[in-house]
Image (tube, rainbow, N blue to C red; front, top):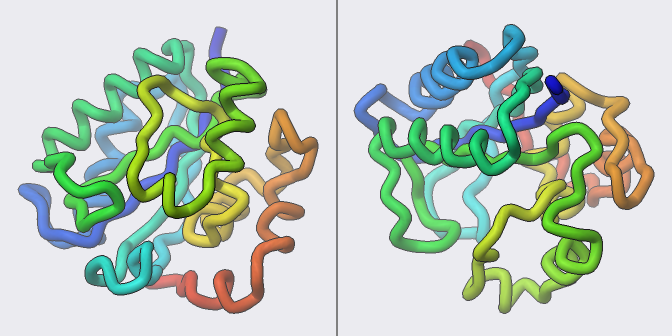
Length: 188
């Protein structure tokens, strides 16, 4: 069963594929090869590194695809693409050649509502130190991240969060105006 799937892409480091913009573009191409549909791509955006001061600005984008892969198999494929770009996971939220985040797959809530809520409500200090050992869907931090929500609204403004019932546009509008203003469109 094919499901609408949202994937966020980001880069702020040179990769074997080139600069950050070239790397995000190649990441989109590689994801297209495993998708059941042509990706619907957002604009590219320049965004400050998070947390502040953790590295150079990112190039970010979001794509929407259809896929019949399981969430776990898609995540494994995304990790393979990251590795092809030279991604090494050393520092949580550090510089990255390519970061591919599985944001949502249809109305999946994984592994269950309680675990999703636990990770969504985790204090920032703990987020910096801990990573989940299993896939959490939808991504538990999207409501806090303008660098995801602004490009997501380019491709799926009416996507409905399966837990909150809010659309992507509503989630984005609830973010602080300053955060949204830091997500600046860049030309291709």
